[in-house]
Image (tube, rainbow, N blue to C red; front, side):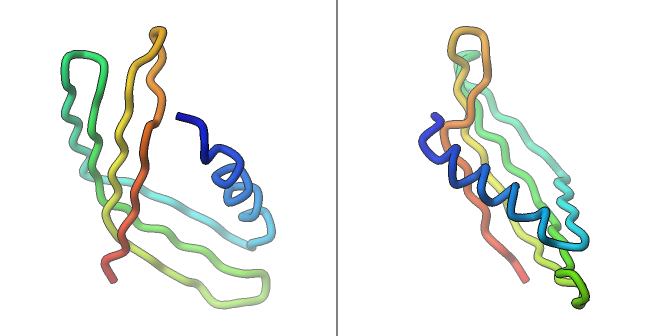
Length: 84
């Protein structure tokens, strides 16, 4: 549930080298199973600009699988697929 934590942290910290970063999720749908697991689907737009550069855009679909352990929701899996 945390095996990719270092890679995700490195990605987030790497955005500090950019002039602008924005992530927006929308149209979230949540399906829960037995009160201890969930699948969350959504669409996203991600925009960023390198310092002194042009704006970049990416949009796509996102899926998160979460499980509840010891009263906390933890991400078991994340997937992003760009659309355009």
